[in-house]
Length: 252
Image (cartoon, rainbow, N blue to C red; front, side, top):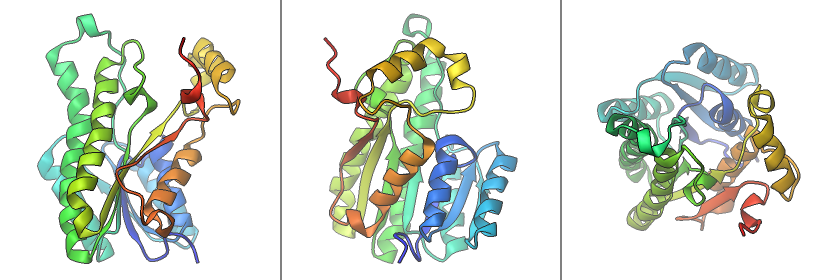
């Protein structure tokens, strides 16, 4: 039996990149997937179409998750479409580059709202549905930058560190209802054009990472499948670092 057979899952920010891979891996393992996007409607539709052509079920849901009411609407639509909600993956977010000395309060809040406040609101809404259904799993996509900051990413790193602690707190408070909450913290994930846009950084990563390569979006998808599956039935409040081992490298 496939690992997520019979589950209904909502994956936020699933129009491309990591979110796309998560949605496809969930579908491959038997889940019906609500594919959320904010503006990438065409890309999200392609993900849903691919799932459908493979014999799965998918629907596209659109909304700006920086609005708490929209978070509740999207979660509710996913649950209504699927008849229940077993899994939520909070993947939607932003990663702008802005040096801290020149950062405005509005720039700071924009990242926190997209990366952290949306996680709070979607998790709270999903947990209400999951409690009524006997439990479920929530996975936040964090980052190794939540532990190790990078230049011009102060707002991003801070938001991802907070996402990890939110998951631990939610695991503590929702565990009694059968709801598990974890995070996945990826390292550098390859994407089209990355090596051309940032050759020096990619070269440094390849030289540092013990497993010798960049991550693939599917690596993150596999981690999320595990955490949503019965194989992780006693795993909650955990941050699953998925970085090829680069975090094990000495920093001095």
